[in-house]
Structures are given as structure tokens and as C-alpha cells.
Image 1 (cartoon, rainbow, N blue to C red):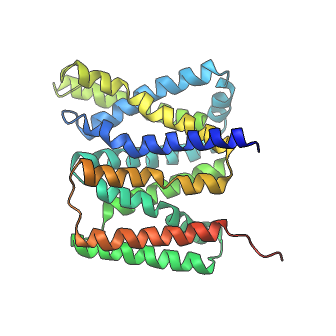
Image 2 (cartoon, one colour):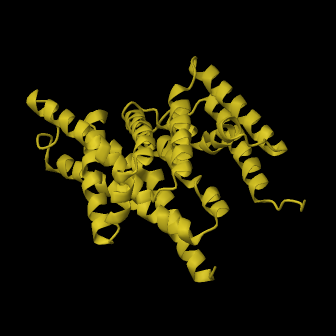
Image 3 (cartoon, rainbow, N blue to C red):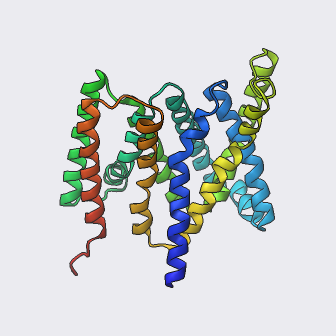
Length: 294
């Protein structure tokens, strides 16, 4: 792989993960809109933009191929529910001041992937992976003690996205075409919900100011653009490099929560987050170090 190609890949990856890390600013700018309505707009505008993107790049055939594959549609039906729940919970966490806990969930996501790999795929833990999972479990426990209850936002985000990733990985579908199908499957429910809000006079779109309406329209760009950058990065970089750079997103969310949104950083956070960071460092080192020849 050429140096120029690798540099472009890093730039695309940093752009994608940086965008996801700073995305809370976008959702935080919509205080007059309920999380379900934001989700509905995200689904509809993303579906329109993604279909247009596939048409413009001559890739509608990949969309038709997925639509004609019953097994693929069944899997995408499950991933649609998972990504919708993940998106809604993330938007809600920002609205209620729990972005810090949400970022914790995305930090532990790669370790949940290791756990699912063992439970679902029969993969064996390596020594440092066991230690990483133990430290992560300790971090989750300490955070739960600090909250007085299980950190369900973090755990739900982590597990929903990990299962989503596992199902999508086994499907071997084009990333953009797969997300397009998911948004199209959600679109009827999203449209019905917006019509129901409008009928009851509770629709923010068109009634909460022009700025708010344009921000909701931009939900398609907020969703699709980082995905396009991510796909471009994945084509140019080693999988391990992409894996290391993925931590930019939750780190960005962590910094936004503490420094910009002023969320309270407690003693439990001060103990649990470093535990997770050490666990991720060990996991990353174990993933990158060369294996002895058998």
C-alpha cells in the first residue's frame, strides 16, 4: 500500500471518527425537538440521501441485490431494530445529560466484540484479552456502584452496536447499501410517526423555527457523510489501524460531555474510565503484536 494511499486513509478515518465524536453538538442544538422526532428525521433524510448517493455512483444494483435476497433482508430486519434503538438511546442520552455514560458504552464496545466472538463464534480468549475483559467488568461495576444502579445506557449502547456489527459482518453486504436498506425499512414507521405528531400539533419541524427545520434536514448528511469517509478509510488502511483510530469517537464524546456540556465527572468516573482505557490499551497491543509462527 502506498504512503499517499495510507495518509488519505488516515485522513478519512480521522474525519469519520472525529465527526462521530463531535456529533453530540448537532443533537444538542435541537432542544426543541424530542429524541423520537429527531430519529424519524434522521431515518427519512438519510434514506433519501443514501438512495441518491447510490444512484449517483451507479451502485443501485447492490441495493436491488440486497432487496432480492430474503436471508439478507431477514438479517437487515434485525440490524434495523438494533441501529434504531442505538440511535434513539444515543440521542436521548444527550438530551438528558448522560453523554458521559454513552461515551463509556462506546469505549467498551470493542471489548464486547471480543466477548461476543467467544460466545457466538467460539473464538478463544488470549491472555491479555481475559485481562482486558476483567478490567472492563471492574470498570462497569465501579460505575454502577457510583450511579447506584447498572449503567444501562452504556451497556445497552455497547451490546446493541456490538451485535449490530456482528450481524453486519457476517452478512458481507456493502456498507452504504446495507444502511440504505435499514433506513428504507424504518422509513414507513418514521413517516407515520411524523404524521401522527403533525396531526396532534406536536411536530417541531416547520414550527420550531427555520434553523431547527434546516438542522433536521441536515440529519441525512450527519448520518451519511461519516459513513462514506469510514468506507473510504477502510479501503485504504489495515483493519488494525482502523481499530485503533475508532477510539477517537468516544474520546471526542467524552471531552464534549465534560468540557462543553459540563456533565458531572464523579469519583466513579475517575476510576472506571482509566480502567477502560488501560483495558483498551492492552487489547490494542495484544491485537497488534506479531504472533509466533506455529
